[in-house]
Structure formats: structure tokens, C-alpha cells
Length: 112
Image (cartoon, rainbow, N blue to C red):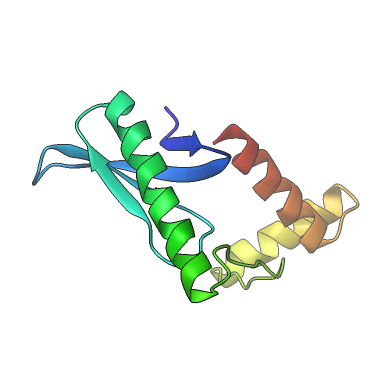
């Protein structure tokens, strides 16, 4: 089950909030927060569109870039034994550790 909903080309991660008995959506990749709640998927899409529209309008009014920029770089901290195992696995495929990790992340992201 994917917990991601795409609304107007923008992805939002979904979760269930048991305290209020509603589905919560939160847009990813924005420079600020834009979340929304509803009791059904159909209503969630409507609320998501409204939330995104309000967020983008607020950014326009304030001259704020609405979308977060990604550098393409991040650090990963692993147990030293896992680090060693990853280096060995990458070398066995004649790849750098960076190539091996990037491909593993790509496969996992495509499956999500």
C-alpha cells in the first residue's frame, strides 16, 4: 500500500490520525508546511487542493519560493560493519559505494 497521494503534480504523504479519526496529508518538497485532513480519500483530494492553493498563494504574496531545493547530497550514518558490507557489495558489482547506494535508493523510491 502506498501512502502517497499526488495532487496537481505534487506528492503528499498520508497517515491516519487515530485521535481525531481522520486521514492526514502533508505535502513533500515544499519550503513550508501544507497539511490537510479529511475522512475519506475523495474529500482528502479536495482538501489537499485547497491547502496547496492557499500555500502557493501565500508564497506569491510574500515573495517566498514555495518549493524546497535539493542539493543531491546527504550523509548516511551506518554501523561500521554495515558500512564494510556495503563497500564489499558495491565492489562485487564493480561499482563505487555512491553508485551502489544511489541505485538502491532509486529502486526503493520507484517501489514506493
